[in-house]
Image (cartoon, rainbow, N blue to C red; front, top):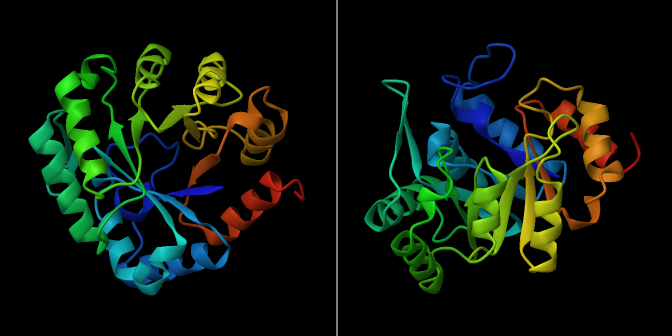
Length: 243
């Protein structure tokens, strides 16, 4: 199970069914350590997640080497205005990643994904992909890939990606054939939106995704967003077949 960190740093312009408040910085650092103490080893973050990256950077310290750290380029978020900004060009990718690394207090991320705004095909111009490949060649990321919204966009991304992050849930199974195609191409698959941003019952949604989906053997990790370690422990029990 992967941990998504939206709620660690952003409470504006999100799609959860209920409003929530951000944890204080002290509580945020405690939450990070509690999640790691559960055995979580994959953390998904992004510059679009407000304060999340800087809070992770403060908390990880010597535990960084135990984490598969996933970040993104393409979208940034201004916590002062509450607005997202999108840029899908090489210079922006480099500057966004460098800012993320500074916030995360790390010299690299393990996976760097394009954080698509939904215009999935146009967000994969050749020059942009080449810039991501250069960042990988320089060691600033160990893998590159795409986090989009459409089957067509992810299908195109199979051509150049090491990893895809796809939406998939009990109520949205449109990506199932795509996940199989990615597996055949030896492209890793992370699943997002398994709980449909909190609109589905967590236990049944996770149980389906990890144990009952026809493509469950092609999924490397199911990423779940939370700031509740107790809930995440229960989620982990479901994924391990104990809950």
